[in-house]
Structures are given as structure tokens and as C-alpha cells.
Image (cartoon, rainbow, N blue to C red; front, side):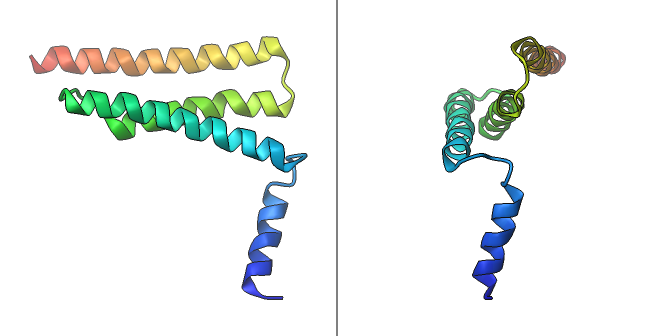
Length: 107
């Protein structure tokens, strides 16, 4: 058994909880799309000289997508998923508040 076979076995065991390749594809596309949309916001902010730029917006968007996707594919009930989404929104609100406070101190 070569090193490529070992890598494939490790990847299969790591992602064995996904029922089919379609689920893995949907997860990857959703997270990558969130990263792309976050990157668009970040590039726009960097062009205008704002504090939070490309990397920040990409990380926040991809992290938020991951936290929303995980319970969805874990089979969590809708009521519980809404609590996860509320937590993500509250966290992003704290990031925004921190940016506003930092901006007001710099002036």
C-alpha cells in the first residue's frame, strides 16, 4: 500500500459520517460561497480604507456558515438551529460593536 492509498483511507475515515459525496459537496460549496461573498465585502472595505478588510470578512463569513451548516447536517431540530443562528448573529454584532468603539477612539 502506497502513501496515496493511506491518504485516501485517512480521508474516508475522517469524513465517514457524511452519507454521500453530495452532502460533502453541498457543505463545501456553501462554505466557499460564504467565503467568496465575505471576500467581496472585504475587498470593498479595503478599497475604501476601512478597518476590517478581506481576511476578516472572509473568516467571519466562513465561520458563520460552518456554525450554521454543522447543526443542519447533524440533524438538529429547527428550534435548536434557530438558537445557533441567533448566537452567530449576536457574535457578529459584538464584532461590529468592537469596530465602532475602536473607530470612535481613533478620532
